[in-house]
Length: 464
Ligand SMILES: [Ca+2]
Image (cartoon, rainbow, N blue to C red):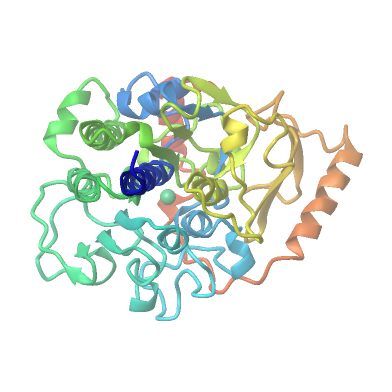
């Protein structure tokens, strides 16, 4: 072999190895898809026992991935949960304890001191996009594009009509592409979000991407098109019927996105999370099944949510995971999957070794909630909680009593004292809320007795 030839051979091999290495490096960065439902009832998916609303596509995430049976969110309603998700930190650490309200002051939004999930993932080489409801500030510095998303299609507020608005719509309800108002003509916004999410995936199929797909379904207003309503003529309660149609539309939309992943041959290289941002409220006729309480409460019905994680070929399929996890974990888990370092100072942890079964210790010894005068702490299976409607914290053993029916404070005063002390230690690390809770409409409050009665009638039984 001549020296020149062997030199060319060596150079060729080096080039080939470099190409292979680049291919492996690209493959080593899975796409990240975070899907969030809004105000869903805990019991309103098939894998949690729902019988009157088929959710085959959401269920498929559980069938092909891991269903976390003790999945939590750090906020009992919309904006605080999203702040925690975007930062991996308890939102009360930086004053984002409450919703910013329908017309927030100009300086209200996810504090600019906080680094966001898309900012981290851009540094890790990802293209970042968001579709749907933002609810983390309205002014330009708080806008999704200012906070790390290279592409944005959606609206800035907490709720809006599901039908097209006048072309002149502005503010929190206008549909935007980037910073620009978009004259959206799709008859139903949930369908539009499916279209935009699929288009984002197709546009970026050849590079690692992060897509935050945030449905406003099934938050009020109760809007559905005939196409979806026609599926539920057997449901008598008109609110539940509309809710079912809205759920079904969201499930279809998720199915369309999963189909796009398949078509692009990206399913096995995409880590997918699905959660609801909080528990169901009475107003939309959702069902939290056996869980006590509702949205905007620190009872389980406000903070325990569907929590599904699919990464085909990497995570086990069809498994359940029972240790408590929380939406704060989504950011560090995604960074770890991306091969990026997980920064110190996060409250969330990388769930991958836990979900893969490589470690058996729980990812969290303790989880905490503060929501104005309401509080909760879960330590192991014990939960000390002052939810809406009580004056003093109560103690429950969630393993034996997930419905929080039997207060153990008198039986186990030492456990109650221990949890109270742990909570106080955490509480001392928090700051005051940066803005007050906006006044809630009376109809959104617990005690809406008719709706509660309707819920009982649904007969949807949840598995824990
Ligand atoms: Ca919500």
